[in-house]
Length: 491
Image (cartoon, rainbow, N blue to C red):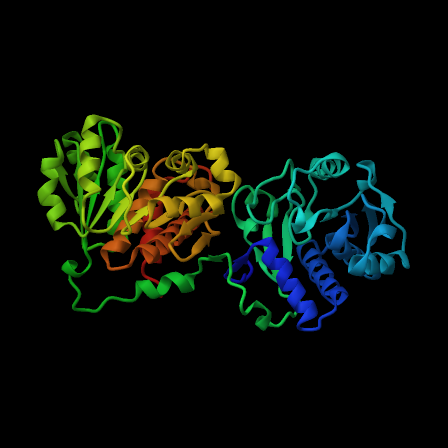
C-alpha cells in the first residue's frame, strides 16, 4: 500500500479545504484541477504502462474536469483516447469548463454508449465524484453498469462513482475500480462500508496544497498506523516478571463452545499478559489444557465459583461462547459488576442488549448484527452509516466501542479511529474471539481502553494479513497466533 495520511475527512470538510486552498492560499481552481488530472494520469501510467487505448467517461462538475485533464495528458503522450460524455462539455462551467475546452481544442468527445467503450484497455471513471448524496439513476446508472460489465481495469478519479464519500455505502450501484487516486484530503468513506470492494488501491495526492490548509479543521477520524501502536509495545526490562503484566480472566464457553474461550485466552497469552485464566464449563477443561497448558482453567457451575477468580483478575474478557442459558446469564450479571476493565464480545453483547448498564472502563466489540441489537435496529441500518452507528453505540453504552467489519471503526469519547488493514479471510469462525483476547491482553499490561482497542484491532488485522500469505480463503483464527507474537515485539 502506498503511504497515506492518517487523517480522514467528511466530504463537506474536503470541500472546505478546497475553498481555503483557492481563496486563502491563492491557488487557482483550475491549477488544482490540472494537478489532480496529472496525478491521476501518472497513476494510470504506473499501473498500466503497456496500455495504449484509454477511455475516459465524463459526467458533469469538477470530477468530469479532472477527467478531461487526464484525457489531454494521455492524448499528448500519443495514446489512443476516447472521451465519452454523459453531460455536454459545453455546459460545464468554472474550472471544469476550462478543462473541457482545453481538451476540445485537441480532439472531440462522443455521447456515452456501452458500445463506445469499444477496444479500451483502461477506463477512467470521471462521472460523479464526492458530491453524490442520492441513488444513482437513469443514464448514469446505465453507464456504471456498462463499465462494470466490461471487466476492464478502471481508474476512479477521487472516488468510485456511486460511493457515498462519508459512509462508504453504494448508492444504488457503483463503479468497481482497480485504483482510486484521491486528492487534498482522504475521504472517510473510502475505507469502510462497501467502499473497499469498489476502490481498489487508494492513492493520495496532496496537489501541492500547503499543510497549513489543514490547520483548524479537525479530522473526522484517523487511520491507525504502526506509529500509533508500536510505542505501546516497548521492549521489556530484563528484570520483568509475570506479576507486572496483569491477569486476564476469560469467561464463557457454554456447552459445545469451549473453543471460543480457548481462542480468546491464547490470544491474551500471545499478546503478553502475565497470567491468563479461563472460567468455563467443566467438560472444556481437559481439551483446553491439552491444547494450551499455559492457560489456567477453572470449572464454574455458577457465579459463586467466579468470586476467587475475579478477586485475582486484572481484566475480564466476557462473552466468547457464553451462550444464552441461565448459566450464562448468571455469569454475565456477576461479571458486569467487576470493578476493573472489561472486554465484552459475542454472547456477552447479546446479553448487554437485554439489560443495559453503562460504564466507562470497558471495550465493546460488536459486529454489525450485534451492533444492531445494541441500537435496536437492523444490521443493514448499521452498515448504511458505520460512522454514525459507532458514535451512537459509544454515546449510549460508554467506554470504547469497536465496530468490526471491513474498515473496522473504534470510537472513544474523544475520537473515531479506522483500521484499513485486514482481509476477507477473517470472515471465519473464532476471529472475534481472538480479537477480544488481544484487547484483554493489552489491557492487562496497563494500556487504557482506547489504546488497547486501537492497538488490538490493528495488530489483529495485521496478523491476519501476514497469516493470509498468498490467499485469504481457508484462513483460521489459530493461524493468527504466531504473527501476533511477532507483531507484539516490534523491532
